[in-house]
Image 1 (tube, rainbow, N blue to C red):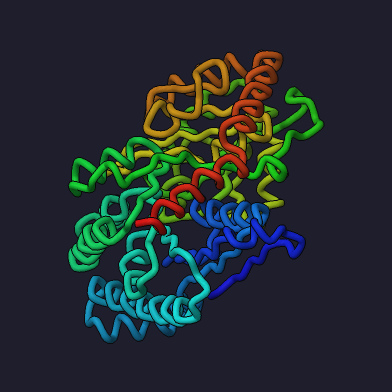
Image 2: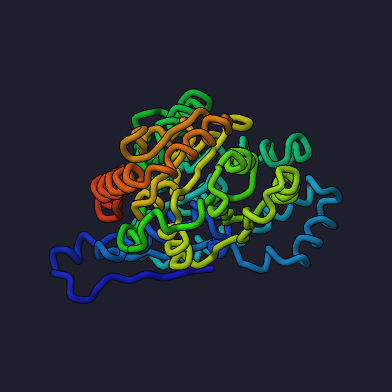
Length: 397
């Protein structure tokens, strides 16, 4: 899949000479909602608004079909080998797309957003920048345990190849930087920590007073490290029966979470919305929430980074209740721009919610401070200027 973004035509001649052409590569489907997809969409928008051009490339969508999964399973002979075979077919397809684009000679730099994409992007002579959103091999262990040793081994090998081949690396928080330095021996001089950003023109405050909003929102993929079960258990302690808990996302933990809701007798107050694919719809959903919960827990070494979901809520002036872990502590000042609690401690979160929901003035004050913080530190123009500086370093070698 390729998506092209072009700059405005009225640019000055001087600016034209310095215009960048960025090839953005990602292994995952841009049709799947989530932090990385939002990050890349915002990057493309910000580059375009700054007068640059970019092309987003990902493998063909056909590889998500049951037919191709069956072909891979037949080719591999086992689930583990089939998963690896499907990944390698997708990467071969992505590699061909990258090569064809690079051969046009019109691109200045390749920006990969996962280690698989960075691995195949080395088929070109273009300078390579890699953004590390999280540790891939650890996420595979979190999701699959020991069920896919061959696939896990390929991911670990890809991490080593990608980190070595990238001229510059962007880590979305200091924890990601520390991990790749300490565990992969990457030279810290080629790593830039650039926290995630948010479209503050899309994620804007809503006019309805907080006291009149009837739901708390958990905008999370349903996997263990996102701690959605912590939010559900904490919500059971909320006395106000008029407030609901809405969960936006899907994932392998959904059956367990639905069962937990039934066990806690919350079925009439908890709604599973499924994935929200349209960003405008997500922006409205976030802005109309009384609060957003980001209850992440470290699992298999996977620790929440500078959560885009948290930044989106803060941009809307909606108070965020988040775990005191990873990049969340780098964007939230407890009691000032949000509320922090010990990861996994649903009783602490429940107590925070009970007290805060009765004090809408404090919630509104925190929400306004959060919006001001995001506008000053995580808006797209300032963020993309830092990313462009990394591109320029990579181009210079």
